[in-house]
Image (cartoon, rainbow, N blue to C red; front, side, top):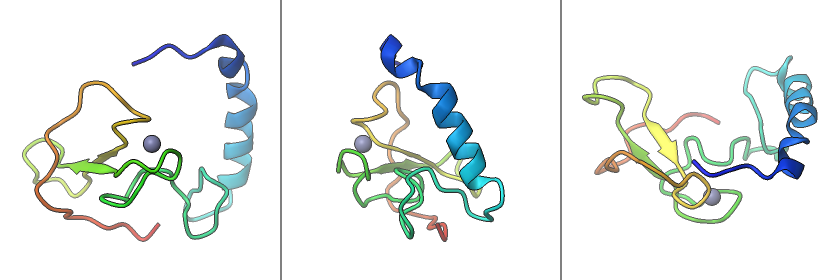
Length: 94
Ligand SMILES: [Zn+2]
């Protein structure tokens, strides 16, 4: 994990408020504000991250018997990462 600059950290409460208000009455959450592209990373593998355009990675959680894989952008979310799955197993609707 990297450090978050103080000027960006100061904006987090307002961003959190906006996201909570924008999503409180929606069945599908959105963090991007873009219709049809609601999430920056989740569910996008192997398509590009909506923030930096790096190919999104996906890996199974645990032994792979769970239905929810992990998605991450290696540029926006650097650090320890699981070995990528050999194929995309899950494509959510959002
Ligand atoms: Zn990214």
